[in-house]
Length: 137
Image (cartoon, rainbow, N blue to C red):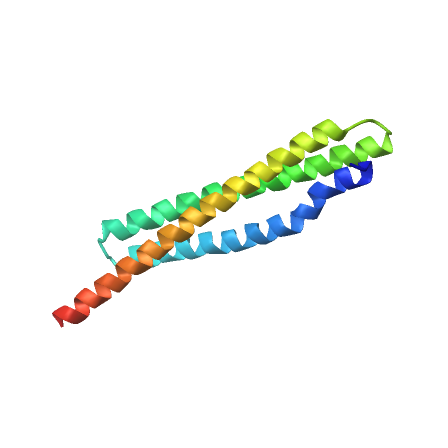
């Protein structure tokens, strides 16, 4: 692999990771707001609160992994760029750091998929509650 593309590659991934960070942070904020609404309403539905906590934990884990990916990819680009300036061979550290960053990205993606599945389960439960309420009324 050409040395310039070696250290630029991790930096090219950064905008995509940034979009995932932004959308995940928004989802995390929505869960936080929903928990506040749940608490303010005086509702004692422990199942709903527990589900929100599980989702919040998943989103937090995804954010930590995404922030870790950003850090690792940035350091990979920095190491590669400095290696190029100093004419030092820096392929191995750049590849290792990039692989670690991509691994964090993959973990975050799997966690976000799991959280999305959990969200659909919550929506289905709400639908069932509404259907039960309509049947009772």
